[in-house]
Image 1 (cartoon, one colour):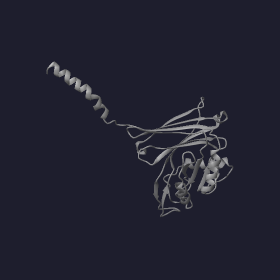
Image 2 (tube, rainbow, N blue to C red):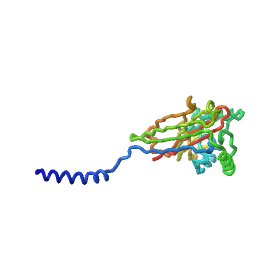
Image 3 (spheres, rainbow, N blue to C red):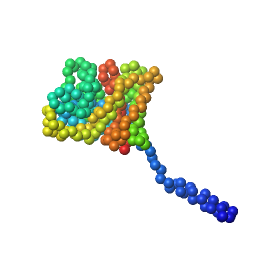
Image 4 (cartoon, rainbow, N blue to C red):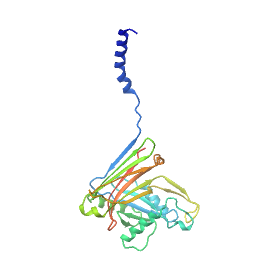
Amino acid sequence: MTQKYRKLSKAIFNLIAPVILSITPVTIFAAECFAKSDSTTVPLLELYTSEGCSSCPPADKWLSGLKPDAHKVIPLAFHVDYWNYIGWQDKFSKAEYSDRQRKTAAFAGAGYVYTPQFVLSGRDFKGADVSRLNQAISANQKLASRANLSLNAITQANGEITLKATAQAVNPDDVKNADIFVAIYENKLVSKVNAGENNGRELRHDYVVRDFFGAFQLNTKNEFVKNITLKAEWKLRNAGAVIFVQDSRNGEILQSLQLPFCS
């Protein structure tokens, strides 16, 4: 190859190389989604329910019918385990969810628990009434946020999801009594019940709490940061995360935030 030809070949390569690089496909190895709370309070709506309770399916259906807006209300369904004894083991139930309901009852001075029970912002909320719920939501939206929250979910190349949750109290008086919880919820769940009070029924559920972390506390700098790793199987689920801060003295929810997982 002549010197002149070498120079010409090099010149041509220098000319087309940037074009080749510019059209080379870029593989994205992670998907990331993020949510941050704003200046007003978003109420948390908890439903305590069970597949072994004959009066629970209408409440489950009502909760599924809500069209939650991250700036209005955040629903979560906790399946309790104290109905399991009658013959049907609710696969979504956990003893810790029953314990949380009992603690909620204790905050209100009640000596019993029941299903279905709705709890709004830490307080018993009778019945499934959209009008009353909207009134309560409007009242909450007038309240300034008492905690700054954020959720960041990154789907890694191996399918695992890294969830970073942060919290910071707004008022100094809330720092010592701020309990922080993180819930992983799942939608579009179906069960065919073949025992107990709902024998023969097909039940559908949304916003079901599958994993629950906490209570966590703020550190000396009035901050909370927690990284949670979820297995790759969560990648294809219709699911998400919720972080909320609760006053350990009276059960009041100071702020809540929801993040659906990105696909």
